[in-house]
Length: 113
Image (cartoon, rainbow, N blue to C red; front, side, top):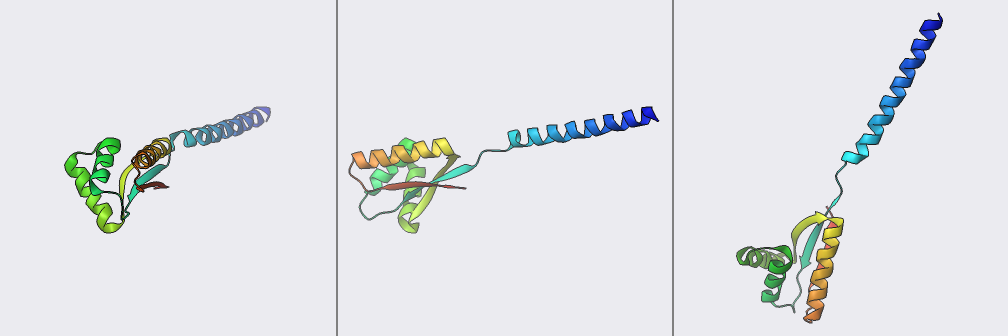
């Protein structure tokens, strides 16, 4: 009888540690949330400036930047990239600072995907 009681205690201990390991590893594999960076249309910022911003800060070719600028112009906004929180935040700050330094009201925002 004593051997059975001891074995049951071992099994319970194993089950507890298995559950603990599974719970610990699950958050580690979770992907971080991603954020969409968007450029918004306005009636004052020149189209050429928007194209330049898209090339400079988002690495787009001139043709890609021109197409995206037209999307912003026609639809009011366009997603220009999807990034981790830190990178999205940096891109928004860079674009906003660059636009202000050139006295353009261009707006760049981010939102969780």
